[in-house]
Length: 380
Image (cartoon, rainbow, N blue to C red):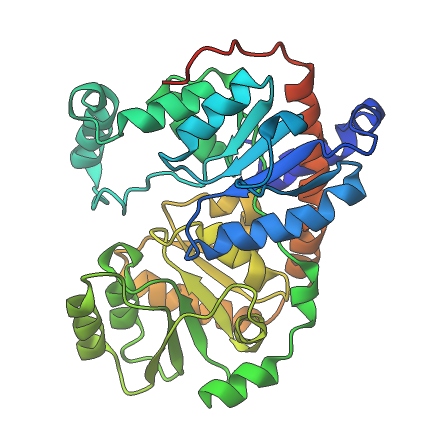
């Protein structure tokens, strides 16, 4: 399987010059929009970053103002996230002859289903997922309609692309992998900001909302007898106060729990630069995005299996099963021994900068623009 970094590199080099010419002029070619939810912090950061990076790649773009803009004034609408309220927007765009691409930003891991089986149970679970989904599917009808209505889906990894193709019967030519992006300036973050804030040095950072699917308890059991400070950084998920109580019960005296920080908060970048290593569960939403932010400063990474981290980081990260307590302990110690890596920082900042993502998107937009326009029939 090709890694996301290789796919991204290929897209950057292969983007034809005719694309930038095709998207030249004073008219805004691509308008960006995310779910209308202030809490979707990652989508907001991505939109702001791409609105600055895409013009440098030759694509005139800006954020969509839904109560002021007419979709007919644009050539392409790029939506971020999967939301039911996007359906009428896609329908309106199609009626106006506007192409629509969607970054779905969603996929289901084993931890989302509450499963991490072994042996015959793993095979049985896989068979049920393949054959039972049509009868017992939890996928809402509107999601299937949304994915069928857009011109191109832009998953963030090959794993996500394969899952979407399988679950929604999407042909390969309507999928194009565009990896998460990161701001290379994170590499210059000041570690002293967070050290002063938390009052701790040389610590292990575990990022993500506190809830069962993010697997903090297994990690805390693994770190129970390890003589190193631990920071659990994240808010308690809704109706998961009981899980926080369990985490506190398991945690050693060297563990402290701190509320989440916004992704573009300088204190968050400082936390990545200050920690001895970052550990992140596969149940965390877009774990690779968090890992990229830490990897920009060369922070050693321990990633739980079940995600698509290997596509992004290859052998430059350490992978472990979330139910292997002794393995987590060994991997964390190995990551701490690695120290910071200039190679990891260079890898992240080269292949996953917002400029690199923007160039890959330019190629994707050009592909959509050359394709025949879908009919104006209702997306519903």
